[in-house]
Length: 208
Image (cartoon, rainbow, N blue to C red; front, side, top):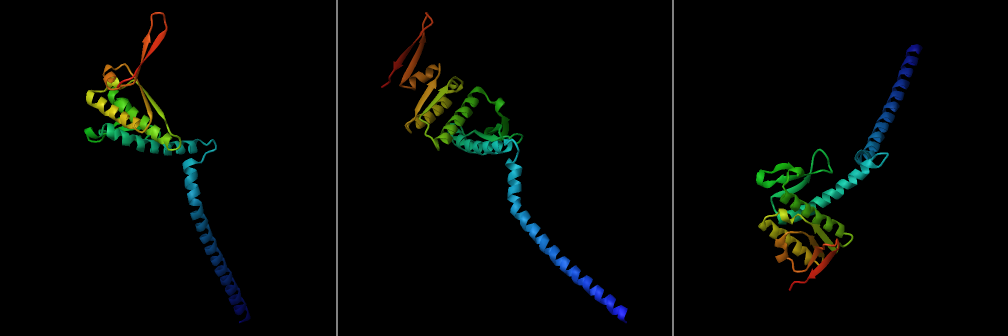
């Protein structure tokens, strides 16, 4: 009888120890789960931008800036021609492609654009970049070199109207071009003439 009671006491001690261990284990599991929840945002952030060289953070920051730029550029592009929308490619977050709404929202690589299409997209990006930079520092001047010769009459009118609206916001817009049609549309001009002796001359024309 005595040995039976002794064995029963040993079992009760083991059960008490097991209950204590189970309680400690449950508390430890709960603590681990809490720490995992607290660490999850940092783990996700590290997956996005963490690297020894800082390349991932740089790419992440560039992606945010590009997203802002595309939002601004697409606003201008919709005014120039509502056919196109610029977006990032799925293969590379910093590469661009075009949605062509006149072709059932076909995705087109930028290299497939014609000269006139490329000019409109480039102009929209330039205007968007001007807006983006102007959020901190006002951009007073914008110079555009060529590209107008690839535009038909209607698209040329649309592009010039967009630039005129930008000029109305007290910004200086400069166009470098050989297109004769622009001469009738722009009053203030600077003509550059190449002389036979290798020297050039400037002629400033003020329209009415």
